[in-house]
Length: 398
Image 1: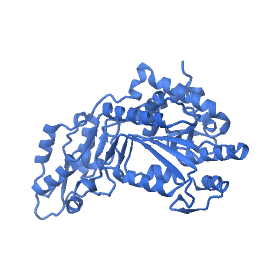
Image 2: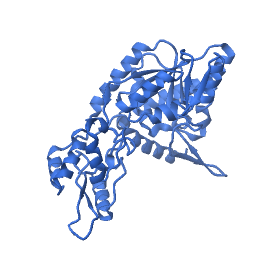
Image 3: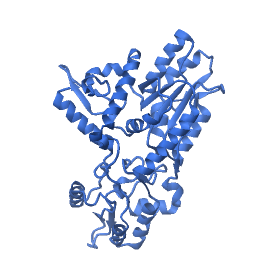
Image 4: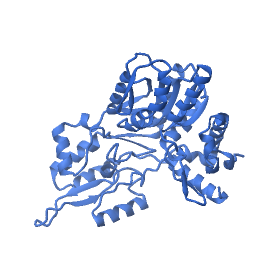
């Protein structure tokens, strides 16, 4: 029987155990206990998606026919025809290939980083009320990166020496080790499903650990300076080995990673299986501009045409408000009005029959508004796990 009340990844009362060096063994033990809970037969849906979400080609044809303007119809087809759907089976296989590459590379002790880079760890909605105010307990079990770690852990041939919430804290611990013993762990492992722009991982997570790296670098007489929150090296030696198990990455993010590897104190090691071109690489600039103007879609250069059975990424990474609900825009039949009419006709399998999804579409058409909720149809197993674990916690009054 797994005791949730004593698990530091679940119980907010044990929050401090995630951030103190002396609780290393407990962190590893509690994570492995949590994995056992997720792996139980009645909790398999916490790890594995129960549905798949390919495009229904018959409905897609009907969708195209609902554009009154043939030019707009063609513009929509550019966005959809370049779209890649990754089934869970294909994702899982790519993940295992990426892990195998890591297993073949890693030789020394390493630390797993859960991904966030602030004092609280990754964002989470677990809260606990004290007498003074509300304290948010930021535990990332509802994040895709934590879910990928859960899927990956059984396949890691060499297990980590610790699992730590953020890179900044891990470097602080290892700097302390260095000053005591002149030794420190140089290898740090990150997990995620896909990187679109690279900013979340490369800038927000890795690039903001200046203080800790500067302190460590000073011990090696490194001449360094800071630029855009990344430590730029003038000495060719590398201080830290960053390992990224990242099965899918966009070409835009890959370029950011390459720059980081060339200019920073980090030796970047990527283990992936699939590189995705962005919309800007797949569609010519003239057509991109027409899409922006005619379809009223905001297109950044790093937006990437891919989605998974476990997640449709948000509007910073791709275009869920267009793809997921089957967005259609037409000229108003009233010639006196220049305002265009928004309607929806979803064509993704296991979405268009979803009653909650249908209600959202109905309300949005009535209000003539866009649909920004990328979880309305495709809800990742980690989101479901979070909801059900929180319910268990509430029942036990944790």
